[in-house]
Image 1: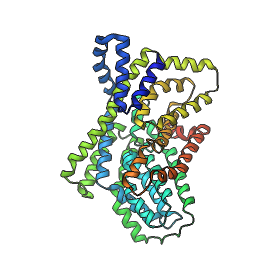
Image 2: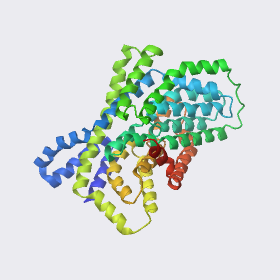
Image 3: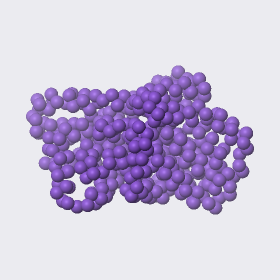
Image 4: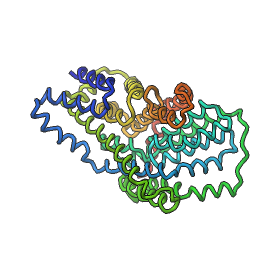
Length: 425
């Protein structure tokens, strides 16, 4: 029976039906089959309400709103200029500046798409005009944008915490060290692939300090949001509200890049993205209810444990599954579809749930640049229409290998993800 519903879900997805409706229809069909029409209709509103009845989820629309405000307010432009002034004299300096600007903007917005759009719109023409290889440029921007879901604050981390009841603060902390490592890996790739380019003239200290002063208010945002969480001033949900108010303040009164006329479009985009995420969550809850009736998570766990095989073989299989799903679905859908089933299995095998959060997010980062539906690939083609999809895919290959290498490192050294959450209480 479980196989039948899995095939049904795949057929709905292949047909082009949106993920939320595919999950919802599959769930409703199962509920009608097992509970009858009246019983299913009675449960629908209850399940839908319960799936969103979590205080933690109030942070999601606020982080999305903060991201939209900073995107419209062009805060990322100043961050790129700051990185450019300080790093352009190094080998592959403009590429390093692109990766660093992506990392900082990711720490501000937590959005991969916003990061790729903002930094890519500036970095791609600048790097191409200075002789950088097009595939390297496209790969750097696409991969740098993915840092938005690993470096806190991260919306996928909030969703992970809402599903598994893990501490959002600990989940945020777990992404810091792996996020820094991945940023350095991306930087090394850019430096290596740009080693033959002539170095640019270093900016003067006046130019560097001027760019720092101009970007100061934007740089202060991750310090307030993430730093405030780490030292215990406020919770992640409160941090979302504070970050949103702060982003409104700096874009309206400091940078003056947003006016009241811009707010309707910002709010509309926020509502659209939030509704998309919550619709997927409701659909996943309906489908998950059917899986619960079938005892799918427990059956899978019992079956795997009875196999008496190495837990690492199971772990490799999970990573292959996530990589496959990443080729056809976006990250939010993967979290809602797989986590309710995989989480009991992972914990029963003795894996740390905080550690698995990071491993899963790195897999989802890989999904963002994996064809045929890697979201960042299409974002880049939208902001760089002269670039072919084959060039974008070719450019992201070494960065995808770096992500795979990070997963391997996390397997051998899980402390990379668990050390900081255990130290910072």
